Image 1: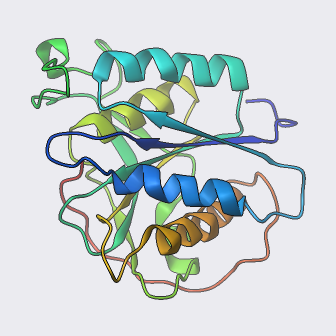
Image 2 (image 1 turned 90 degrees about the horizontal axis):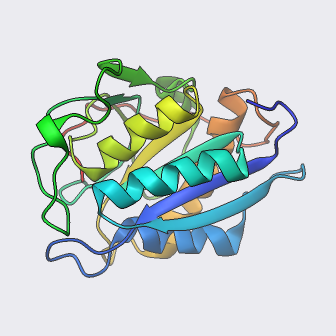
Length: 216
């Protein structure tokens, strides 16, 4: 990873199943308006990924090769969550659910011959401990759900030597509008960059931890 790189890529996902509006992409669009809020020259790039295993794989390769980011943050929707979950690891096996095109990875494997688990270089527990976002809980998880989000995360961790993160956000609601989720992403990513040693930020505060469940 190029220590001089100052590019952060943040992705959200498009529609899937009955969810015509994906809160992950709506939150990322709000973040794009806000920016990262950092006191250094860090370029923010935001991209939408389809809920499509093969297309995700192709686009991730392009992201890591063309942008050479210091960090890639993937944002997905947890359809049953009330909190924001920070995922520590991606898993290689047990991908049984089909994507929007009816496809699933052969043998349910993300990367044949790859490690069973890939870990982020960022300590999500530390980020959860320090970060605080008004009106929404930020929690820790080690189970990203074995669907497109987990698949994306595992491949991104592999391609980026661990310099990736996955954030699960709840569906949009009156209490959790896109504007709030976008502000939460800004605060969390600032803390992730500080935890990962990428840049200095001024946001340091305490938060809560909780166990995670299944995600998108």
